[in-house]
Image (cartoon, rainbow, N blue to C red; front, side, top):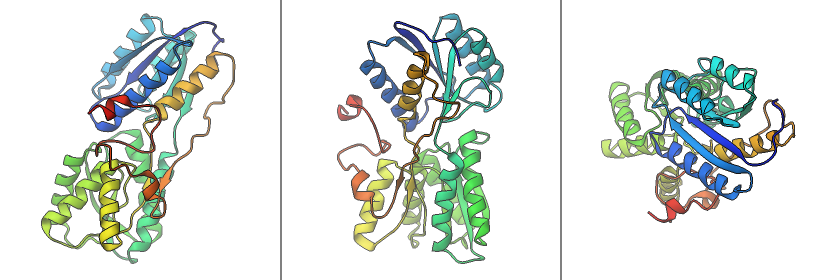
Length: 311
């Protein structure tokens, strides 16, 4: 922990990239939360490393030079930023990593259990299939900590049930890339009985690809991505289609800010404060799906999110 601070603080957010709807919403939710904490936060400075570790190291150095009191990090690498985190700690800056976390012992980690996220999807998918069946996977970004943890959890659950992963493709959790990857994988592996997708946009893309092929739907877990939830509800109402959606909410940025503000005021939240992993099920789908909001919206969500209603 770092010494407690009085008065307003400056918050820096080093974002590894801002290239998809999830990250856009994550930043907006953080900005909304900062506005609600106007008595505590003097300024929020946001940087975008465009998925470059070197750029993120440079961004963090710049934020430290600008005198931030709190450094929030969504990391491009679990280990490559540790030297920068050490430098921040030595300067008395509180570091909180979230979503894609850093492994440094200095600072706080605010995250859902990403391996559990994958396990939930894999354990749901396995009983929809038979032992000996094969599946393909729609992954996130190669080398990304969240991608690796989710995939490990899902693969372990599938292998425990005798299901073999035939092939996979990186999609950056993007719907268009997911649709293209699903079409290619299904053409190359027509025998597969299911798809493990670790993103809601990619799950929607996979369903679209299957429908374009004119083949029968297959089981695909999703995520709390509104476009996927809308499609799931449509198919559930028309044919009883089933799925599940563990959710990595963009409001993790808000959780990280709240924990950081408590910590700089002298509270000890611990190194890894517990964060709930929401799971949308067949029975709770109606509570979460938002037909009135865009597809590119992640649920559950926090804050007024005026930018979304204004579209």
